[in-house]
Every structure is written in structure tokens, then in C-alpha cells.
Amino acid sequence: MSQPDAITINIRAKARQRDLIDQAAARLGRTRSDFMLEVSCKAAEDVLLDQTYFGLSAEQFTQFQALLDAPPAVSPRLLRTLSAKAPWERK
Image (cartoon, rainbow, N blue to C red; front, top):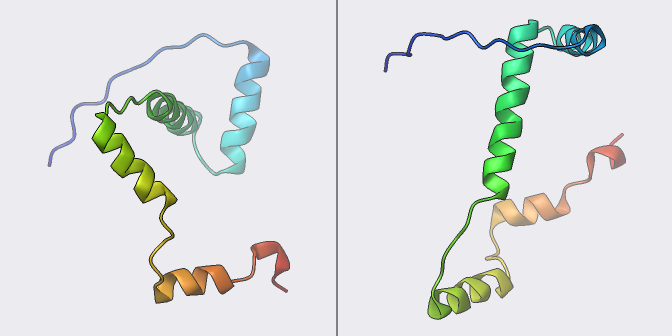
């Protein structure tokens, strides 16, 4: 699959904002542009996901609630996850 041509996005920022972005990008070993694009896309995804609307009929909503209320199926992966120590408990 071919990538579309890159486009330019211009933005005005105050010097302190630029410096803050540059400092964060440097900590991650990224360029300013890469950092800003990654963070902006993540924020845009969060906004869109938070505003997603699911329209359900009364019957579908009842089925959805039943799925949420049902206990999870026991599997080796679930048991392993539940028995694992939290990162701050590991030594």
C-alpha cells in the first residue's frame, strides 16, 4: 500500500511552548515534528473515541448489559493475568 504524499502543517507557538515541546521530544529521541504529530494524533483519537455514539434498540441494550454483567470466561491467560504481581510489587 502506497503512502500518500506528506503535507505541511504550519502552527504558531510561543517560544516557551516550543522549548517545552523540544525538551519533551529530545527526551524521547524524536524530532519536534514527529513528537508533535504523534501527540496530536493521539489526542485527536482520544477525542473521537470519547465521542463515539452507539445506537442500540432496547433488546440490543439488554443484551449488551448482560454481556457486561456476566463474569469473564476463565482461561489460562486470565488466570495468569490475575495472579501476576503488579510492577511495583516486583523486586
